[in-house]
Amino acid sequence: MAFLILVIGDLHIPDRAIDIPPKFKKLLTPGKISQTLCLGNLTDRSVYESLRSISPDLKLVRGRCDVEATSLPLTQVVVHGSLRIGFLEGFTLVSTEPDLLLAEANRLDVDVLCWGGTHRFDAFEYMDKFFVNPGSATGAFLTTWGLGGGEKGDGKGTKELGDEEVTPSFCLMDVQGISLTLYVYQLRKDANGSENVAVEKVTYTKPVEPTTGS
Image (cartoon, rainbow, N blue to C red; front, side, top):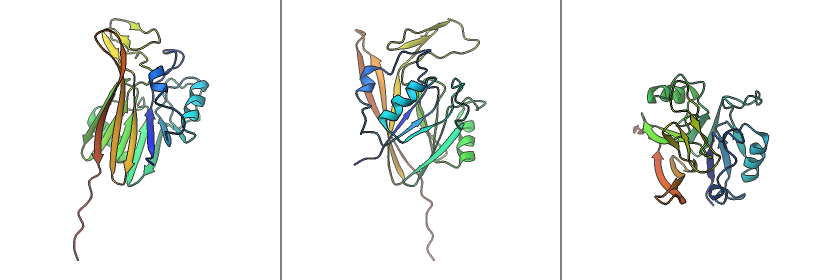
């Protein structure tokens, strides 16, 4: 049986979103997920209990909006197979440019770094390390100082900040030894406004130092 790791964050329930979309909830049923890495911004205790029902093995870090969860760490590291996986919300980073993310990965001594706070999915390999942002599981709108257009959000489907849309998303990781398969789930709307879950796969393999013969 596969050991599936749920990577999820930026839920902002109930202040910016009503709940996780029903089509996501059908996928995140108890018994399927072995461990959850939550990148913060739950903002309500009920969300914590909901995530615990998906997998009792719940690892949490504090997000910028988790103002009452002062005891939560800012970063955590878990080990699966031969991979060290670090995660954080990202508000402590000066920037999320690749070089700064790489510096954080090196500081934590991890092969994979998951970060949040942007509400947008991203995944890329850089300097032999793998970086993942699962986006916002609820599609919660993102507040940004100095960006015109205002904020919009009704708790349903795709949210907007000005003219930018936030697509609900989360990730599942399957780690086998030095290899990781990332499954990205996004709730997208077609031309008729119907919501469908799209799934994409990204793979990463940790480089192995060549052994020298005697």
